[in-house]
Image 1 (cartoon, rainbow, N blue to C red):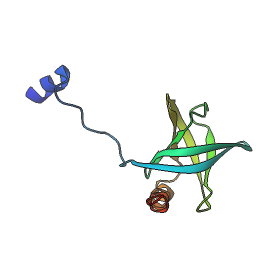
Image 2: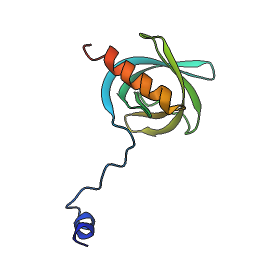
Image 3: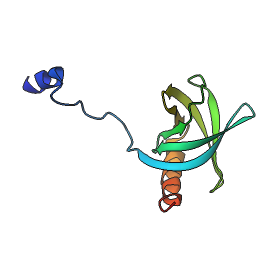
Image 4: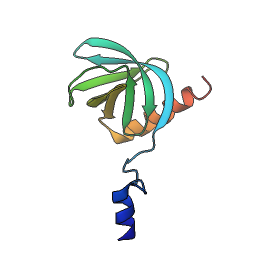
Length: 111
């Protein structure tokens, strides 16, 4: 009961419900949507997806292809939503997302 009251009064922050830890990475990407290419950069990455900058203004659910030119990795994904400062994207495959997340972070650790 006390914890509920604390949460209602804003004394205690709610637990983070994110499934995957996010990592800040500044890396260039190419996003392809129906043959149209966008130059973007990663704001953050996780095994579930990435947040891209700038805002792409694409509808949620649209299928896209993300290409990391430095590694040659390419991965299908779906737009989740736009935030004021970027576009959230979910990888179509969690397993592939895990690999890409680790790979991209390693490639840009020292950059």
